[in-house]
Image (cartoon, rainbow, N blue to C red; front, top):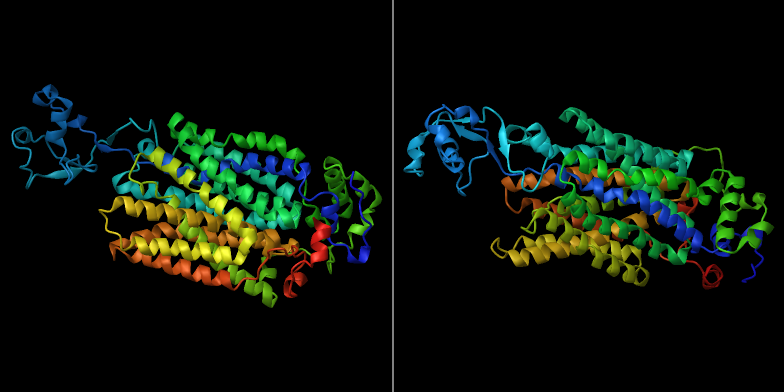
Length: 548
C-alpha cells in the first residue's frame, strides 16, 4: 500500500490533501453516481414542453350544426367539407367554421368565396393518434389562446432563473448538501402538483416553482463533483457529468411515447427524485466549503470517509482537524458572502461581466436549437431522439481537446463555430433540406460542446467562497438568454434572416468574451476572492507530480 508523504503545514494546500486521500477513487465515483440520480430529471423537465405542450391537428367541433336532417346523413368527411373552410395546403381550418352548413360545396368544393365564417363556437376536435392528452387538448390552448400554450416553456425557465439566484446564494450560505435536499423536495412537491393541476393558471404557477427547484439540481451537483476531484481528473468529471443529459435527452421521447398523457408523463419524469431523496444521505458535503467556512471538524470527517473508502485512511488518522484551518486561508470565516461580492473588487467584477456574456450566448443558442423539435422535419419522437444522440460526438470531441488546448480556446472555438453554422444556414436555400439539416446538426454539436465547457470552466474560475453564487449568477443570465431566444425567432416576420443574424452576433460577442477569460487548465481552484485578485499560476512540475 502506498505510504503517505509528510507535508509541511505551511505549504499544504487542499489539492495536496486530496491527492493523499486519492482525488479520483471509489469515493468520488460513488459521489458521481449518487448525483446522477437527480440529474436524470434535468433534460426530462427542461425539454418536457416539447411533448406536454404539443398541439395536435384540430378543427372546430361541428356537432352544433347538426340540424337533424341532411347533415346527419353525411359521412364524417362530407360534414367537414360543408362545415370547415379549407386552408391553402388543403387541410381543414383550425380556428374557423362556416356559420351554417354549405351543402353546395359537396358539388363544387372550390367555390368558397364570400362564405361567412365564424370562430369555433363549441370547442375543438383533436387528433389523438399521436398524443392522448396535452395541455392544448386539456384546456383548448389553441387559436386565440395559443400564446398561453407557448408560454409554458418561458414560465418554467423564469422559475429556473429565480432558482439559480436563490439556490446559488443558499449553497454558499448553508452548504451544497442541504441545498440539494431543499431542491429535491421543492421539485418533487411542485412537479407532482403540476400533474394534478385543475386549470392552466395553477399549472403555470406549479411549473414555475418546479423550474426553481430544478435549477439547484443543475448547478449544485456539478460544483459538488468538481470540488471533490483532483486537478488531473476535473476535465473527465466535467464531461462525464454532462453525459447523463445527452442519454436522458434521447430517452425522453421513449418515455413520452409510452406515456402519452401529459399528466402521467409529468408525474413519471418527476419520480426519480424519490430515489434521489433516499440516496441523499450518502452524499458528502464539500470539504472545501466546510474548511472555507471554519467547519474543520466536519471537513475532517468527510475527508476521513474519503480516505477510508479509497484505502488511504492512515493519512487522515495522522492529520489533526486544526491543521485543516491552515489549508485555506480566509480573512474572516464568519463572513457571509453574497452576490454583491461579485462586483466589489476589480477582477471579480471583470469575471462576472465576461462569464455573464458567455453564458448568455451559450444558453440562447443551445436552447434555441433544442426547443425547435420540428427542425429535422420528421416525427417529433424521432426528432428528439436525434437531438440527444447528436450530442454524444460533442462529448467525445470536448473530452479529447480540453486537456490539449485548454478551456479558453475550446470555449471560444465552440461559440465561434456555432455562430458560423447559423450564419452559413442563412445562405442555404430552403429547398436544400438535407444540407440545412446537416449544418443545423453540426451547429447543435458545437452548441452542446460549448455548454459542456461552460459549466466546468465557470466552476474553475470562481473561488470556493463564491463558487455557487458565481454559478447561480451566470446560470441566471443564461436563462435570460433561454427566455429571449424564442422572441428572437419571432423577428423573422420583420426579415427572414434577422434571427440568424442576431444569434450570429451573439455567438461572436460570447466567443470574444471567452477569449478574455483566464486559462484554468492545470491551475488550482481558487479558494478565496483574494486568490482571484492575485494572478494564479500553473502548477509547477514538482507539484504536478506530487498531486498525481
